[in-house]
Image (cartoon, rainbow, N blue to C red; front, side, top):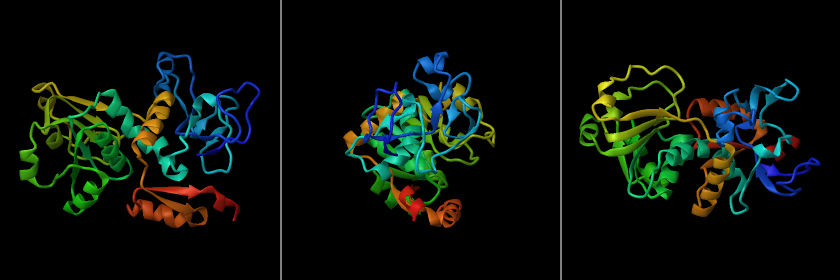
Length: 285
């Protein structure tokens, strides 16, 4: 997130001084059916990610956002509403869109019962966004100690997933589950908390599901197990505007880049609520 410092001769969407952001993608083929549907993240030729992906122009690897400037095609730039704090808005381009996109795609609306699995960077944004959509929001967590924090974030209820009685009481209750847990976990007990036609959406796990899902949990109640990856550029703009309208930002800790190694160790230890944001001005210090 930063201010536009220069524009190309054919760029018309932004002007010097505009507050803008670049998310997880910087290019795609722009011609396939996914791209034409504003779903560049599912580009059939593969999107060019902001980091560690061959650039479509010169073939060099993209180097990410840890820099004091970046050149990007205007199609992959989004406008950051001035009412949003730039630092707290930055993670919306990743954690925000990752949770907003599936909630929007599957039609979460006022009165729906939504369960959020896990409360890290993704989970706390899922709580805020689902609540702003009018849903009744419940956090599933392994730790009862997170109950107060979950309610501070906007959760209406908390279920301790290691408590068999609480899980049994929740059977058939939820319309949607947004699963932000990034490590292997047993999906079967959670699927049983969905009503018929309920949807369990994976946004954190990108490895084999272990233990296996028992198909009866899906077949016998026409439940859906789905996945979702970030969001397209138009939808990323949409979530920024939605957050500005509803006063939603990501909980962050600003970071002096000279402390990046310490921050990395803290991230591995889970000692951050809920995203580090690097102050790039410290790169010059």
